[in-house]
Amino acid sequence: MKTKIFAMILIVSALFAACAPKENRHGNYVIKDNVIVFDEPQRVEGQKSVLQFTVDPIENVRVGFIGLGMRGYDAVDRFTYIDGITIVALCDIVPDRVESVQTNILEARGMSRAAAYTGSESWRQLCERDDIDLVYICTDWIKHVPMAVYAMQHGKHVAVEVPAATSIAECWQLVDVAEQTQRHCMMLENCCYDFFELTALNMAQQGMFGELIHGEGAYIHNLEPFWHEYYDNWRLKFNQNHAGDVYPTHGLGPLCQAFNIHRGDRMKTLVSMSTPSYNGKKIAKEMMNVDEFANGDMTTTMISTEKNKTLLIEHNVYTYRPYNRLYQLTGTDGFANKYPIEGFTLLDEKLPAGFIAEGQHLNPHAFVPAEVRDKIMSEYLHPIAVEIEEKAKEVGGHGGMDFIMDYRLIYCLHNGLPLDQDVYDAAEWSCLGELTAASIANGGMPVAIPDFTRGDWDKVHGYKHAVK
Image 1 (tube, helix red, strand yellow):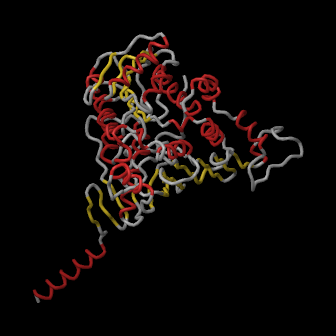
Image 2 (image 1 turned 180 degrees about the vertical axis):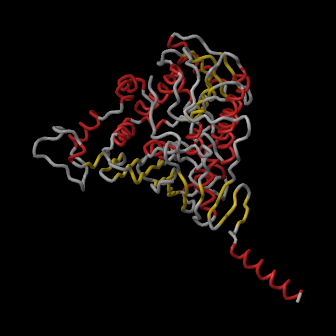
Image 3 (image 1 turned 180 degrees about the horizontal axis):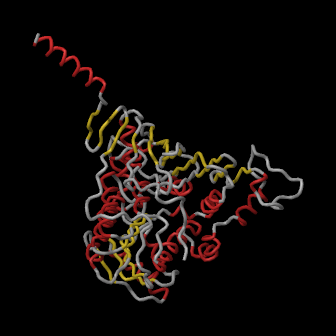
Protein backbone atom coordinates (compact mmCIF):
# COMPACT_ATOMS: atom_id res chain seq x y z
CA MET A 1 0.00 0.00 0.00
CA LYS A 2 2.74 2.42 0.98
CA THR A 3 4.50 1.66 -2.29
CA LYS A 4 1.34 2.53 -4.29
CA ILE A 5 0.84 5.80 -2.38
CA PHE A 6 4.46 6.73 -2.93
CA ALA A 7 4.12 5.97 -6.65
CA MET A 8 0.98 8.10 -6.87
CA ILE A 9 2.78 10.98 -5.16
CA LEU A 10 5.58 10.74 -7.70
CA ILE A 11 3.09 10.75 -10.59
CA VAL A 12 1.20 13.79 -9.22
CA SER A 13 4.48 15.62 -8.61
CA ALA A 14 5.56 14.90 -12.15
CA LEU A 15 2.25 16.20 -13.51
CA PHE A 16 2.57 19.41 -11.51
CA ALA A 17 6.15 19.83 -12.71
CA ALA A 18 5.07 19.33 -16.31
CA CYS A 19 2.34 21.96 -15.95
CA ALA A 20 4.51 24.47 -14.13
CA PRO A 21 6.02 27.35 -16.13
CA LYS A 22 9.33 26.36 -17.65
CA GLU A 23 12.14 28.65 -16.59
CA ASN A 24 15.78 28.60 -17.68
CA ARG A 25 18.33 31.12 -16.47
CA HIS A 26 20.86 32.73 -18.82
CA GLY A 27 23.02 35.24 -16.94
CA ASN A 28 20.82 38.20 -15.98
CA TYR A 29 17.64 36.88 -17.58
CA VAL A 30 15.40 33.84 -17.52
CA ILE A 31 13.41 32.24 -20.32
CA LYS A 32 9.91 31.70 -18.96
CA ASP A 33 7.15 30.27 -21.15
CA ASN A 34 9.21 31.16 -24.24
CA VAL A 35 9.60 34.80 -23.18
CA ILE A 36 12.94 36.32 -22.16
CA VAL A 37 12.57 38.14 -18.84
CA PHE A 38 15.41 40.28 -17.50
CA ASP A 39 15.92 40.78 -13.78
CA GLU A 40 14.17 43.87 -12.39
CA PRO A 41 15.64 44.99 -9.07
CA GLN A 42 13.27 46.48 -6.52
CA ARG A 43 13.63 50.10 -5.46
CA VAL A 44 15.62 50.00 -2.24
CA GLU A 45 14.79 51.94 0.87
CA GLY A 46 15.93 55.54 0.64
CA GLN A 47 15.44 55.83 -3.12
CA LYS A 48 12.72 58.11 -4.41
CA SER A 49 11.18 58.29 -7.88
CA VAL A 50 12.36 61.15 -10.08
CA LEU A 51 9.30 61.12 -12.34
CA GLN A 52 8.52 64.80 -13.11
CA PHE A 53 11.55 65.64 -10.95
CA THR A 54 12.46 69.29 -10.40
CA VAL A 55 15.10 71.22 -8.52
CA ASP A 56 15.21 74.86 -7.46
CA PRO A 57 15.84 77.24 -10.37
CA ILE A 58 19.50 77.69 -11.24
CA GLU A 59 20.00 81.28 -12.37
CA ASN A 60 23.42 80.67 -13.88
CA VAL A 61 24.15 77.08 -14.93
CA ARG A 62 27.83 76.26 -14.49
CA VAL A 63 28.86 73.56 -16.96
CA GLY A 64 31.74 71.12 -17.31
CA PHE A 65 32.23 69.28 -20.60
CA ILE A 66 33.81 65.83 -20.84
CA GLY A 67 34.80 64.67 -24.33
CA LEU A 68 35.63 67.27 -26.98
CA GLY A 69 35.77 65.12 -30.09
CA MET A 70 33.11 64.62 -32.74
CA ARG A 71 30.17 65.82 -30.59
CA GLY A 72 31.72 67.68 -27.68
CA TYR A 73 33.48 70.42 -29.64
CA ASP A 74 30.24 71.54 -31.29
CA ALA A 75 28.35 71.28 -28.00
CA VAL A 76 30.67 73.81 -26.35
CA ASP A 77 30.26 76.12 -29.32
CA ARG A 78 26.46 75.94 -29.11
CA PHE A 79 26.51 76.74 -25.39
CA THR A 80 28.27 80.04 -26.07
CA TYR A 81 25.01 81.20 -27.68
CA ILE A 82 22.90 80.46 -24.58
CA ASP A 83 22.42 83.12 -21.92
CA GLY A 84 22.78 82.30 -18.23
CA ILE A 85 25.55 79.72 -18.44
CA THR A 86 29.23 79.63 -17.51
CA ILE A 87 31.62 77.15 -19.07
CA VAL A 88 33.71 76.22 -16.05
CA ALA A 89 35.77 73.21 -17.14
CA LEU A 90 36.81 71.21 -20.21
CA CYS A 91 38.11 67.65 -20.27
CA ASP A 92 39.44 65.38 -22.99
CA ILE A 93 41.93 62.56 -23.17
CA VAL A 94 43.73 64.49 -25.94
CA PRO A 95 45.26 67.77 -24.67
CA ASP A 96 45.17 69.42 -28.11
CA ARG A 97 41.38 69.15 -28.17
CA VAL A 98 41.07 71.07 -24.92
CA GLU A 99 43.36 73.79 -26.20
CA SER A 100 41.49 73.97 -29.49
CA VAL A 101 38.22 74.65 -27.68
CA GLN A 102 39.88 77.23 -25.43
CA THR A 103 41.37 79.11 -28.37
CA ASN A 104 38.92 78.64 -31.22
CA ILE A 105 35.68 78.86 -29.26
CA LEU A 106 35.99 80.49 -25.84
CA GLU A 107 38.68 83.06 -26.54
CA ALA A 108 37.37 83.69 -30.05
CA ARG A 109 34.01 84.67 -28.54
CA GLY A 110 35.55 86.82 -25.83
CA MET A 111 34.91 84.33 -23.04
CA SER A 112 37.26 83.31 -20.23
CA ARG A 113 39.32 80.16 -20.60
CA ALA A 114 37.95 77.21 -18.68
CA ALA A 115 39.79 74.94 -16.26
CA ALA A 116 41.53 72.26 -18.34
CA TYR A 117 41.67 68.52 -17.61
CA THR A 118 43.46 65.97 -19.75
CA GLY A 119 44.32 62.31 -19.42
CA SER A 120 42.26 59.17 -19.09
CA GLU A 121 41.06 59.68 -15.49
CA SER A 122 41.04 63.48 -15.14
CA TRP A 123 37.27 63.56 -15.68
CA ARG A 124 36.92 62.49 -12.05
CA GLN A 125 38.57 65.73 -10.92
CA LEU A 126 36.13 67.72 -13.05
CA CYS A 127 33.17 65.94 -11.44
CA GLU A 128 34.59 66.58 -7.97
CA ARG A 129 34.65 70.37 -8.38
CA ASP A 130 32.20 72.29 -6.21
CA ASP A 131 31.53 75.02 -8.78
CA ILE A 132 29.75 72.93 -11.45
CA ASP A 133 26.00 72.35 -11.73
CA LEU A 134 25.87 70.31 -14.95
CA VAL A 135 28.28 67.75 -16.41
CA TYR A 136 27.84 67.33 -20.18
CA ILE A 137 29.26 63.99 -21.43
CA CYS A 138 30.26 63.40 -25.07
CA THR A 139 32.67 60.46 -24.83
CA ASP A 140 32.55 56.95 -26.28
CA TRP A 141 29.58 54.87 -25.14
CA ILE A 142 31.49 52.65 -22.70
CA LYS A 143 32.34 55.63 -20.48
CA HIS A 144 28.85 57.16 -20.39
CA VAL A 145 27.52 55.39 -17.30
CA PRO A 146 30.68 55.47 -15.14
CA MET A 147 31.00 59.21 -15.77
CA ALA A 148 27.31 59.97 -15.31
CA VAL A 149 27.13 57.97 -12.09
CA TYR A 150 30.25 59.58 -10.65
CA ALA A 151 28.98 63.06 -11.54
CA MET A 152 25.58 62.47 -9.90
CA GLN A 153 27.25 61.02 -6.81
CA HIS A 154 29.15 64.28 -6.56
CA GLY A 155 26.01 66.37 -6.70
CA LYS A 156 25.96 67.23 -10.39
CA HIS A 157 23.13 67.08 -12.89
CA VAL A 158 24.08 65.13 -16.00
CA ALA A 159 23.49 65.37 -19.73
CA VAL A 160 24.88 62.36 -21.58
CA GLU A 161 25.15 61.56 -25.27
CA VAL A 162 23.31 58.66 -26.89
CA PRO A 163 22.97 55.88 -26.05
CA ALA A 164 23.10 56.69 -22.36
CA ALA A 165 23.86 53.08 -21.43
CA THR A 166 25.00 49.90 -23.19
CA SER A 167 23.46 47.18 -21.00
CA ILE A 168 20.43 46.51 -18.82
CA ALA A 169 22.62 46.61 -15.72
CA GLU A 170 23.88 50.06 -16.73
CA CYS A 171 20.32 51.25 -17.35
CA TRP A 172 19.31 50.26 -13.84
CA GLN A 173 22.45 51.86 -12.46
CA LEU A 174 21.54 55.21 -14.03
CA VAL A 175 18.00 54.98 -12.67
CA ASP A 176 19.07 53.96 -9.18
CA VAL A 177 21.77 56.61 -8.82
CA ALA A 178 19.47 59.36 -10.12
CA GLU A 179 16.87 58.28 -7.56
CA GLN A 180 19.44 58.00 -4.76
CA THR A 181 21.06 61.37 -5.43
CA GLN A 182 17.93 63.20 -6.66
CA ARG A 183 19.81 64.59 -9.63
CA HIS A 184 18.72 65.07 -13.23
CA CYS A 185 20.11 62.63 -15.79
CA MET A 186 19.09 63.54 -19.34
CA MET A 187 20.10 61.70 -22.49
CA LEU A 188 20.96 64.09 -25.32
CA GLU A 189 18.54 62.69 -27.91
CA ASN A 190 18.68 65.52 -30.42
CA CYS A 191 16.23 64.00 -32.92
CA CYS A 192 13.38 64.77 -30.54
CA TYR A 193 14.00 68.42 -31.45
CA ASP A 194 13.99 68.14 -35.24
CA PHE A 195 11.46 70.60 -36.68
CA PHE A 196 9.45 67.88 -38.43
CA GLU A 197 9.31 65.63 -35.38
CA LEU A 198 8.26 68.55 -33.17
CA THR A 199 5.58 69.60 -35.65
CA ALA A 200 4.24 66.06 -35.98
CA LEU A 201 4.21 65.72 -32.19
CA ASN A 202 2.23 68.95 -31.90
CA MET A 203 -0.24 67.72 -34.51
CA ALA A 204 -0.61 64.35 -32.79
CA GLN A 205 -1.25 66.02 -29.45
CA GLN A 206 -4.00 68.08 -31.09
CA GLY A 207 -5.62 64.88 -32.40
CA MET A 208 -5.00 65.51 -36.08
CA PHE A 209 -3.98 61.90 -36.72
CA GLY A 210 -6.74 60.46 -34.53
CA GLU A 211 -5.57 57.70 -32.19
CA LEU A 212 -1.93 56.81 -32.84
CA ILE A 213 -1.62 53.06 -33.36
CA HIS A 214 1.77 52.46 -35.01
CA GLY A 215 5.11 54.22 -35.35
CA GLU A 216 8.35 53.57 -37.21
CA GLY A 217 11.85 54.87 -36.58
CA ALA A 218 15.36 54.03 -37.71
CA TYR A 219 19.02 54.87 -37.89
CA ILE A 220 20.14 53.89 -41.38
CA HIS A 221 23.43 55.63 -42.14
CA ASN A 222 26.41 54.10 -43.90
CA LEU A 223 29.32 55.03 -41.61
CA GLU A 224 32.06 53.84 -43.95
CA PRO A 225 33.42 57.40 -44.44
CA PHE A 226 33.51 57.97 -40.68
CA TRP A 227 34.86 54.81 -39.02
CA HIS A 228 38.42 56.18 -38.97
CA GLU A 229 37.30 59.32 -37.11
CA TYR A 230 36.34 57.56 -33.88
CA TYR A 231 39.14 57.79 -31.33
CA ASP A 232 41.00 54.49 -31.02
CA ASN A 233 38.36 52.95 -33.31
CA TRP A 234 36.03 52.61 -30.32
CA ARG A 235 32.73 52.45 -32.22
CA LEU A 236 33.68 49.67 -34.64
CA LYS A 237 35.21 47.72 -31.76
CA PHE A 238 31.96 48.02 -29.83
CA ASN A 239 29.90 46.82 -32.79
CA GLN A 240 32.28 43.92 -33.34
CA ASN A 241 31.46 42.64 -29.86
CA HIS A 242 27.74 43.45 -29.63
CA ALA A 243 24.81 42.11 -31.60
CA GLY A 244 21.43 43.85 -31.74
CA ASP A 245 20.33 47.43 -32.24
CA VAL A 246 23.17 49.18 -30.48
CA TYR A 247 22.06 52.67 -31.60
CA PRO A 248 18.26 52.81 -31.37
CA THR A 249 17.49 56.15 -29.76
CA HIS A 250 17.38 58.49 -32.80
CA GLY A 251 14.41 56.59 -34.18
CA LEU A 252 12.90 55.50 -30.88
CA GLY A 253 13.03 58.71 -28.84
CA PRO A 254 10.63 60.86 -30.88
CA LEU A 255 8.21 57.92 -31.16
CA CYS A 256 8.19 57.38 -27.39
CA GLN A 257 7.22 61.00 -26.86
CA ALA A 258 4.39 60.78 -29.41
CA PHE A 259 3.16 57.50 -27.89
CA ASN A 260 3.38 58.79 -24.28
CA ILE A 261 5.80 56.09 -23.14
CA HIS A 262 5.85 56.00 -19.31
CA ARG A 263 3.38 58.83 -19.42
CA GLY A 264 0.27 56.67 -19.81
CA ASP A 265 1.67 53.75 -21.82
CA ARG A 266 4.83 51.67 -21.74
CA MET A 267 6.87 49.48 -24.05
CA LYS A 268 6.02 45.93 -23.01
CA THR A 269 7.52 43.34 -25.40
CA LEU A 270 9.93 43.26 -28.33
CA VAL A 271 11.01 40.80 -30.98
CA SER A 272 14.20 41.37 -32.94
CA MET A 273 15.89 39.80 -35.95
CA SER A 274 19.13 40.50 -37.73
CA THR A 275 20.91 39.59 -40.94
CA PRO A 276 24.40 38.11 -40.81
CA SER A 277 27.30 40.54 -40.91
CA TYR A 278 28.64 40.97 -44.42
CA ASN A 279 29.81 44.55 -44.80
CA GLY A 280 30.51 45.00 -41.11
CA LYS A 281 32.73 41.96 -41.07
CA LYS A 282 34.52 43.17 -44.20
CA ILE A 283 35.22 46.59 -42.68
CA ALA A 284 36.39 45.02 -39.41
CA LYS A 285 38.75 42.72 -41.32
CA GLU A 286 40.26 45.68 -43.13
CA MET A 287 40.59 47.91 -40.08
CA MET A 288 41.13 45.44 -37.24
CA ASN A 289 42.24 42.21 -38.91
CA VAL A 290 39.49 40.22 -37.17
CA ASP A 291 37.34 37.46 -38.63
CA GLU A 292 34.29 37.67 -36.33
CA PHE A 293 31.76 40.49 -36.14
CA ALA A 294 28.69 40.25 -33.91
CA ASN A 295 26.59 43.12 -35.23
CA GLY A 296 24.42 42.18 -38.19
CA ASP A 297 24.27 44.50 -41.17
CA MET A 298 20.52 45.04 -40.76
CA THR A 299 18.60 44.73 -37.49
CA THR A 300 14.81 45.01 -37.30
CA THR A 301 12.83 45.20 -34.07
CA MET A 302 9.10 45.17 -33.38
CA ILE A 303 7.78 46.52 -30.08
CA SER A 304 4.32 46.23 -28.57
CA THR A 305 3.09 48.52 -25.82
CA GLU A 306 0.86 47.98 -22.83
CA LYS A 307 -2.00 49.47 -24.85
CA ASN A 308 -1.19 47.20 -27.82
CA LYS A 309 0.28 49.95 -30.00
CA THR A 310 3.23 48.85 -32.17
CA LEU A 311 6.61 50.37 -33.02
CA LEU A 312 9.14 49.30 -35.67
CA ILE A 313 12.82 50.20 -35.17
CA GLU A 314 15.65 49.57 -37.67
CA HIS A 315 19.45 49.82 -37.50
CA ASN A 316 21.93 49.67 -40.37
CA VAL A 317 25.27 51.50 -40.48
CA TYR A 318 26.98 49.26 -43.03
CA THR A 319 25.23 49.01 -46.41
CA TYR A 320 25.06 51.35 -49.37
CA ARG A 321 21.70 53.08 -49.26
CA PRO A 322 20.43 56.63 -48.71
CA TYR A 323 20.50 58.08 -45.22
CA ASN A 324 17.18 57.33 -43.54
CA ARG A 325 16.25 58.37 -40.03
CA LEU A 326 12.82 56.89 -40.57
CA TYR A 327 10.05 58.66 -38.68
CA GLN A 328 6.42 57.66 -39.21
CA LEU A 329 3.26 58.11 -37.20
CA THR A 330 0.20 56.09 -38.21
CA GLY A 331 -3.10 57.10 -36.65
CA THR A 332 -6.72 56.17 -37.17
CA ASP A 333 -7.28 59.44 -39.06
CA GLY A 334 -3.90 60.38 -40.52
CA PHE A 335 -0.25 59.75 -41.17
CA ALA A 336 3.08 61.59 -40.87
CA ASN A 337 6.29 60.62 -42.67
CA LYS A 338 9.76 62.19 -42.65
CA TYR A 339 12.05 60.03 -44.82
CA PRO A 340 12.58 59.80 -47.73
CA ILE A 341 9.75 62.32 -48.30
CA GLU A 342 8.33 64.71 -45.73
CA GLY A 343 4.58 64.61 -45.85
CA PHE A 344 1.22 64.11 -44.19
CA THR A 345 -1.95 62.26 -45.04
CA LEU A 346 -4.97 63.92 -43.43
CA LEU A 347 -8.74 64.04 -43.58
CA ASP A 348 -10.37 67.30 -44.64
CA GLU A 349 -12.23 67.66 -41.36
CA LYS A 350 -9.01 67.55 -39.32
CA LEU A 351 -7.93 70.93 -40.70
CA PRO A 352 -9.52 74.23 -39.58
CA ALA A 353 -12.15 75.82 -41.77
CA GLY A 354 -10.57 77.79 -44.59
CA PHE A 355 -7.23 76.03 -44.29
CA ILE A 356 -7.57 74.54 -47.78
CA ALA A 357 -9.11 76.26 -50.79
CA GLU A 358 -12.87 76.11 -51.23
CA GLY A 359 -13.79 73.02 -53.20
CA GLN A 360 -10.39 71.42 -52.56
CA HIS A 361 -10.38 67.96 -50.97
CA LEU A 362 -7.48 66.01 -49.55
CA ASN A 363 -6.78 62.54 -50.91
CA PRO A 364 -6.80 60.05 -48.02
CA HIS A 365 -4.63 57.73 -50.13
CA ALA A 366 -1.80 60.20 -50.77
CA PHE A 367 0.28 62.92 -49.19
CA VAL A 368 -1.33 66.34 -49.00
CA PRO A 369 -0.18 68.69 -51.81
CA ALA A 370 3.15 70.43 -51.27
CA GLU A 371 1.56 73.82 -50.62
CA VAL A 372 -0.71 72.33 -47.95
CA ARG A 373 2.23 70.50 -46.35
CA ASP A 374 4.24 73.73 -46.19
CA LYS A 375 1.31 75.58 -44.67
CA ILE A 376 0.90 72.80 -42.08
CA MET A 377 4.60 72.98 -41.20
CA SER A 378 4.19 76.71 -40.63
CA GLU A 379 0.81 76.76 -38.87
CA TYR A 380 1.46 73.75 -36.64
CA LEU A 381 5.12 74.44 -35.86
CA HIS A 382 5.65 73.41 -32.25
CA PRO A 383 5.56 76.35 -29.80
CA ILE A 384 9.13 75.59 -28.73
CA ALA A 385 10.30 75.78 -32.32
CA VAL A 386 8.35 79.01 -32.85
CA GLU A 387 10.13 80.49 -29.85
CA ILE A 388 13.68 79.59 -30.87
CA GLU A 389 13.58 78.62 -34.58
CA GLU A 390 15.43 81.62 -36.00
CA LYS A 391 18.31 81.42 -33.52
CA ALA A 392 18.47 77.62 -33.77
CA LYS A 393 18.93 77.74 -37.53
CA GLU A 394 21.58 80.43 -37.12
CA VAL A 395 23.57 78.47 -34.52
CA GLY A 396 23.03 75.13 -36.26
CA GLY A 397 23.75 71.61 -35.18
CA HIS A 398 21.92 69.20 -37.48
CA GLY A 399 19.86 72.04 -38.86
CA GLY A 400 19.22 73.57 -35.45
CA MET A 401 17.83 70.64 -33.49
CA ASP A 402 21.02 70.30 -31.44
CA PHE A 403 20.74 73.89 -30.31
CA ILE A 404 17.05 73.51 -29.40
CA MET A 405 18.01 70.48 -27.30
CA ASP A 406 20.65 72.44 -25.38
CA TYR A 407 18.43 75.50 -25.08
CA ARG A 408 15.59 73.44 -23.59
CA LEU A 409 17.93 71.75 -21.11
CA ILE A 410 19.14 75.10 -19.79
CA TYR A 411 15.66 76.64 -19.93
CA CYS A 412 14.30 73.92 -17.66
CA LEU A 413 17.21 74.23 -15.23
CA HIS A 414 16.83 78.03 -15.18
CA ASN A 415 13.15 77.74 -14.34
CA GLY A 416 13.13 74.71 -12.04
CA LEU A 417 11.05 72.60 -14.45
CA PRO A 418 11.06 68.88 -15.28
CA LEU A 419 13.46 68.18 -18.14
CA ASP A 420 12.08 67.14 -21.53
CA GLN A 421 13.81 63.77 -21.12
CA ASP A 422 14.33 62.09 -17.76
CA VAL A 423 16.44 59.19 -16.58
CA TYR A 424 13.64 56.72 -17.30
CA ASP A 425 13.67 57.85 -20.94
CA ALA A 426 17.43 57.38 -20.97
CA ALA A 427 17.08 53.82 -19.69
CA GLU A 428 14.04 52.85 -21.76
CA TRP A 429 15.46 54.12 -25.04
CA SER A 430 18.94 52.71 -24.43
CA CYS A 431 17.85 49.28 -23.20
CA LEU A 432 17.11 48.01 -26.71
CA GLY A 433 20.79 47.21 -27.21
CA GLU A 434 20.96 44.22 -24.87
CA LEU A 435 17.28 43.28 -25.24
CA THR A 436 17.49 42.97 -29.03
CA ALA A 437 20.73 40.99 -28.76
CA ALA A 438 18.99 38.51 -26.44
CA SER A 439 16.04 38.15 -28.81
CA ILE A 440 18.34 37.57 -31.79
CA ALA A 441 20.45 35.05 -29.87
CA ASN A 442 17.29 33.06 -29.12
CA GLY A 443 15.88 32.96 -32.64
CA GLY A 444 13.69 36.04 -32.40
CA MET A 445 12.14 35.07 -29.07
CA PRO A 446 9.95 37.75 -27.41
CA VAL A 447 11.60 39.81 -24.68
CA ALA A 448 9.75 41.47 -21.83
CA ILE A 449 10.93 45.10 -21.63
CA PRO A 450 11.81 46.12 -18.05
CA ASP A 451 9.68 48.79 -16.39
CA PHE A 452 12.33 51.25 -15.27
CA THR A 453 9.68 53.42 -13.58
CA ARG A 454 8.84 50.46 -11.30
CA GLY A 455 5.10 50.76 -11.79
CA ASP A 456 4.84 54.54 -12.21
CA TRP A 457 4.45 54.49 -15.99
CA ASP A 458 0.77 55.53 -15.87
CA LYS A 459 1.00 58.24 -13.20
CA VAL A 460 1.59 61.00 -15.78
CA HIS A 461 -1.06 61.41 -18.46
CA GLY A 462 0.46 62.44 -21.78
CA TYR A 463 3.88 63.76 -22.77
CA LYS A 464 4.36 67.52 -22.35
CA HIS A 465 7.22 70.00 -22.62
CA ALA A 466 7.23 71.94 -19.36
CA VAL A 467 6.97 75.72 -19.66
CA LYS A 468 7.12 78.50 -17.10
